Length: 226
Image (cartoon, rainbow, N blue to C red; front, side, top):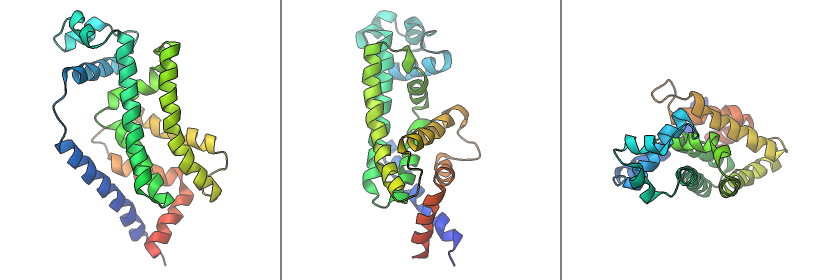
């Protein structure tokens, strides 16, 4: 008989590896530069007030700067928004690509990808990632093309693994719809997740993985029974 405790241990062991890696990386994080401080302040204001309702003067005031000093680093308010979004997409793409590369078996790989997506979305850059999700319509058409190209490249990572899952009969064959449903569910957590609540990011990733990929649980059952 399959021991459910072994299944949980398999899930927890994955989460512990991610925690150790993140802690080691955080210990080596350098102090933010002035440019990074501007991006952080802008992301916070854009998230709380919206891009259109936030002025350059407000961003500068938060940092004790003049508007002219801010323009030394960025040509316009839109440039700020574009960089916030580009950095957010590059960070989450790098994290999910690494998770994908580190796991050959599909269940562990998709769990790792779910975890890294949530860690990037709900972690220290929550403001920037929320702005990325909801303010892209504020961009000019040219800037939208740049951001959407990066988003499409990120979604390819999910399409690859979900296509493999579909071929194995583990998800619906409409891979595009599966991907949209999955990312929609993960991204919506930015609206309701609160740090320090009943679920940490690791536990949330495990629970959402099981809910979104019920057939993948069999992969962990086989691993636990082996």
